[in-house]
Image 1 (cartoon, rainbow over the protein chains, first blue to last red):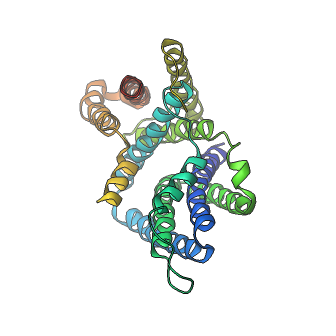
Image 2: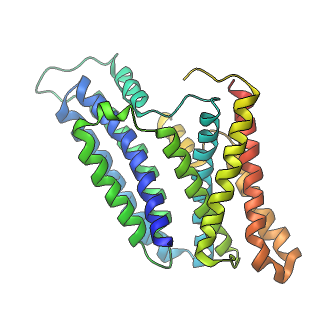
Length: 246
Length: 69
């Protein structure tokens, strides 16, 4: 049960972040050159891989288990609550819906003022935008997957979820632009927020010597309570005032 | 500076309500409620944490709804 929940949490979180990174790289590739976009993206991915390789072993070796659980729990709660806060506001119509298409447009806008250098010369502006997009989305992926992987049961579920998400999203990259607009990103991100916050509360509780009633299954009722409270507040806000334009 | 600002937003979020609220919840739970509850903490502590996080969530959403109309 915990294996599936952790794999699901890691998989959906990685999918959403990868979609955003992919939208930025596609925007650079479509408006500039594929070679520079891929080079910038590869450099960003490499920087994230180095960060992941350092972060996991160093953290595991140097921090006591109880402290580690509280730190990881706090980090997951912070990430999860931010996604859940935005998701609740979006579902209530108080904030524009999440959209990787918007990331695509923003990346193209960012490059509008930088002239494209002649063929044969490096396009540093394009490379930098692709690098920054992959690096920033990648850091979120590294932190979330590292946090979910630092469990006594091992990193397998988080890595399996992340691997499936990576293969799926990158595999879809070639024909992604149109389907991108149809993906319910707001609902996906809200779901990730609920899952990450639940895991965060669960891990932080373990670090503070809590015996969760029901053991690992406690994650299920944490998910149910957080989802119910968020939905209730979203419905209340939606009824209270008119929606903002998306 | 833009990259640092973006990194800060990635880790701490868009508002200070969440990091401050989460820190206050964990500190209160660990340093005040846990000693007060004694042995009962092992079974009730998780629900104390959940309640604190729910308060932070509801407050941050209410804050966001008020400021972004």
